[in-house]
Length: 168
Length: 256
Image 1: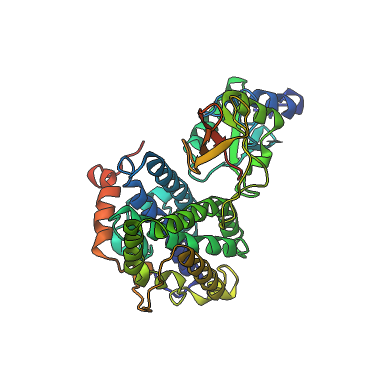
Image 2 (image 1 turned 90 degrees about the vertical axis):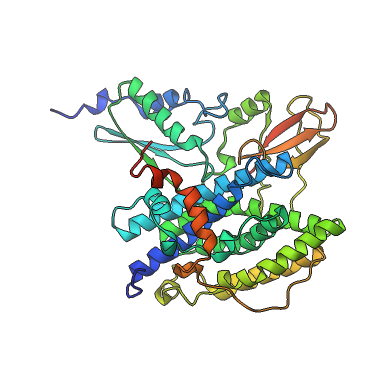
């Protein structure tokens, strides 16, 4: 059996575009590429090596994301795939793409305000915009909301609750 | 217990200490799920459990790799009995009232954060990576627990009383976190694990500062309860494991 020609293998650009179709299981409007979860794509002979990084240590979606990436690629006919978990550099919210942030906002989740991650001392007061009415008169209800990555906020103008994607 | 003659077994035990403390604390916190005093607290404490169990997986997976006997993180979590666990005695304390749960969390977080910061400089890159990943999550934990200790300590007469009682009760369990006597000295001399004095200083400083803002009195005693890190546990761990390991004990070898 001969190795496929380098020309037969899909380009990494093509593969990135396929991975744009893999949604985050929890927030399906954003893809695993938007979130910066897929770090690198490299062909090693006939094996595609995909470097992925976990968002939060205990994120239950991590296993599902890995399976979804693999099945999307197999659907395009890629037979040999190796998913490599890369812990360092640690995932951070600055890796969320601009379009990802806009999609979060449109979906009703306020995107992270960069540079405001916790440091273990007093909590910073940050200005978070309400995704519904865009008011800045919002308040933090709890730093831990529906998932570990999100905080629960309330808008004092339209009175609706919403999730804020914490800066990590 | 594994012999302390080699650095490998010393490293294995250190990794178990980190992973087991996260695991048992995660389980203790998860016992509040559905029973929390307020909805937001129920959710917050469950989310923190989730973070901690994620970190457990990282530590125990590395422990299994270092041990080299083919044990996975799941094997280590679900197939060991109490005398092989190396968690701090502090984290196996029963939940009691929510005040005790919060003080327990605060005292642990105040150690966990500086410890992880120190481990980011570990000469063992695998450890440095896990610390780098975990440190940002734990910063959120410490912010929350410090905030709640202050609000409840400097709260009503009732909340103050409960927080002070909890601090008095848990104080003798804190010394074990700050001691390094049980660790293989090579781990420290080779820079795998940070200097214990710096961690203890950071802990003391933060706890003193928060207690002051919380109008809580730091207990006078320097009595230290120890043994957890060496597999000598209270009876509570047995009950925790019976619940946590129920599935594996009832259906040995079960897999998803």
